[in-house]
Amino acid sequence: MGTHLTEQIVIDWVKQILDYINNKFPLAHLRVDKNCILETNDVWLVRCQNNEYLSTGDVRYQLHAFPEPFILIDKRDYQIYLVRDAYCEELPEAYKSFRGGGFYDVIFEEVLYKNITASQSLIEISSPDLLEEVSSIWQGSTHLRSINELCYSNFSNLSKEDVLALAEAVARQEGLNKSNETVELVVSNLSSVDSVWFVGFQSQAFLLSNKVQDMLLGNPVYLVDKQDGKIYACEGSGEGLLNDFLYHKYGWHSEFLWEPLNLPKIRLELPKTKETPYICFNADKGIFKIEGKSTIREDELFFAFYRPVVDFLEGYKQIALPKSVFYFDIEYLDERSNGFYFDIFGKISELQEFTKVYVIWYFEDDDQGDIGAEYLEHFSDLSMEFVQKTK
Image (cartoon, rainbow, N blue to C red; front, side, top):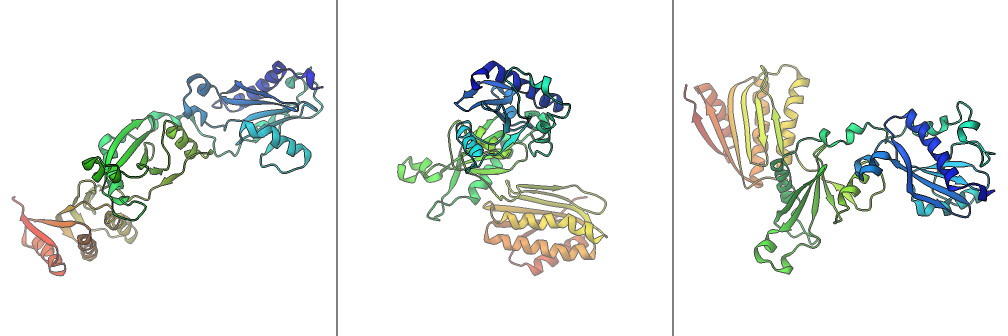
């Protein structure tokens, strides 16, 4: 029976299945990969891929809505199966175990009725709901997404300056080697490649001495995702890093280990309102500004506004620069805000263990100056300068 199932018949059957999928899901764009049609004694195996990927080689399209499916056709009874998340090389043996009742770790999903003859077209023998199984396989798929999500135009516009600030923060936080001895890391390579930034580091000692003993083992490589700004440490190198990261990001098997870094925020900016001050914290520059008044009445809004401020200062301990300057230009604080600012100054005082802190307090009248003087009285260890504003 198997001799009657030619490659052309197999391709025709697979095309009919893919036409149905593509009509059901216009963004699928699946077609037969003619470079990956495998015949064994028992089966025909056909790999299907996104048409845009086959045309352009752009891995974004390969990672589109539908994971690359294989369609397997049994030569003995023409039963057709659809297989996902598997490797071509392992499928024939896995299928033997599947049909023989042995162990297998691949899911073979039946998509057509049995008792099809090689001379028949799938469409000719199909009832109206026969191919519904094909589409139902993907109805709840976590991979189903619009192509726009993978377009570069949708990625955030991280500038080189932004990425360099992130990279320097990584260097300050991750500056340890395997012996837990402090290593001063510096950015040795910064490159934008499609949807990511790659950041390479080297020890400062090696760059100064050029001696092998000062070189870091396996120079660390980090990746910054342009879409969400997340940073990953990578145990790998080479031209395949970008593709491997995209496989990891969209839930496919990846060769390298991608470890997301829990890096504190680099910047925090909260707009000024009638009840809240303007807050602009730049950890990459060591400059922190609070300007305006604070008269938030509702408890929920109060803590929603100030919690990120406290969390930012706590996180800054991990990436603190040698020098940090805090500028306060406070117009008015109600009683509750005044109490909370003592907590802020407490965090600033704690930072002295990690950075040299300077506080600049601007004031127009005696009342504003007295508020700053009260904080200085409680935190006398701080270096605090009072600057009177000119009217």
